[in-house]
Image (cartoon, rainbow, N blue to C red; front, side, top):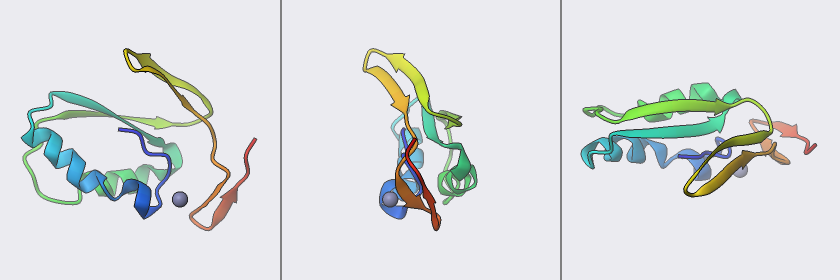
Length: 92
Ligand SMILES: [Zn+2]
């Protein structure tokens, strides 16, 4: 799971996806999101009552650069030039 930022149109699926993974028997998953939004991610992943069986590893992104790679290719992060939380974050 990769979240670019915490505007609703980019993160409000999390309360549905996280419980669904447990219902579908997903053993493990990884969540990448901007570290500055950790409090929002915590609220979203625990937004409802469900029996959690999926091991969800949170890997907040602290800085630009390569995050991981796998059969899908490589996953990179780069700071957005997009207003988030009332603060405009300039591109580098
Ligand atoms: Zn946005």
